[in-house]
Image 1 (cartoon, one colour):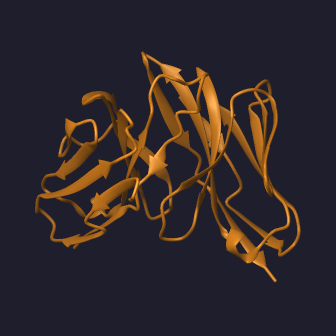
Image 2: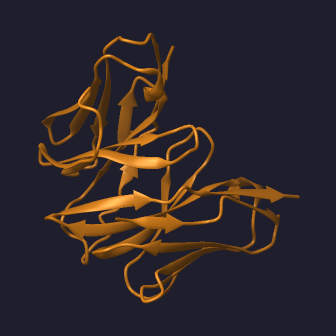
Length: 117
Length: 112
């Protein structure tokens, strides 16, 4: 009954490959996010989707393409992987637009540790 | 843009009280969150402040002063399991969306 789940937990791959990370939430939330946490533990927003629509797209290389087939899923596809892509990628979800009446707290998945060799 | 500052590391003794400070500069302030992150794990929600004052939740309390751009997380009766990174995050609104910006985290070590 995991709230936010991600697969795989670990991903080791060669430079230049294409890979995907999957995220699913069963909290009934309508907003999902991808964050990148680098080796210095700095957690930075990459993308946010609300009701399958992209609402936040930070300065991220276009090799990264999020896809949201439905409200409960947000996948991240990465083309032509580079060494600098090595990091932990966290998916998160929250309610939306109720700030002021609720916290719209973001709940995080367990993370995917990506290592590019 | 957003700017969030918190100390990089702190050390405290088991059973003691520790205060972790966070200062921020942002436009469109819409709430401040504290998260706890144990090594190798996901951040987990601890507290939320949107109005000035103190929010208490068991051993943890969080304070906010919007006019000063300042918050702190207070941990009482420290336990060894409280050793973790504590992330201050500010939510801001703009262009029809909300965004959560995290500080770099404070690594707390609790020693016997």
